Image (tube, rainbow, N blue to C red; front, side, top):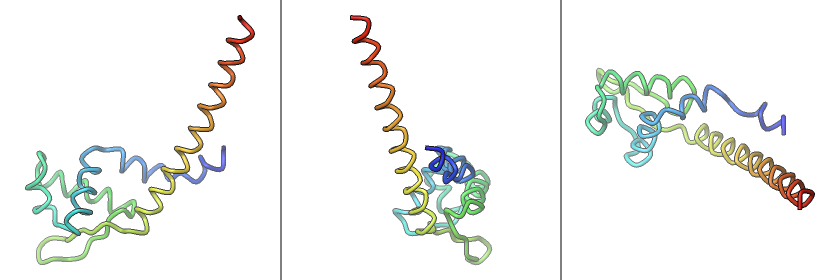
Length: 114
């Protein structure tokens, strides 16, 4: 179990933990890319807030920015997203195993009480 915990990138999951950043990732995946301005038109936050959220996603490698005139155009980094999905799957499996052990312990206790 501890090997799974060591593999988890806390900065990555902190970045993904924010609902606005998850929405930005969704938009970027659907649209293939966008700028803070174009993405900001689709969210209930300011363009500046979108730019800050994109900066966080960029720092953890989930998106990559390229110059686009006076702005930056962001695209999802497929390799880092694949890594994030693999981590989520690994963590999910580890928790499933933990919950199964808890269930077996609870069932054993219940049988002993009956």
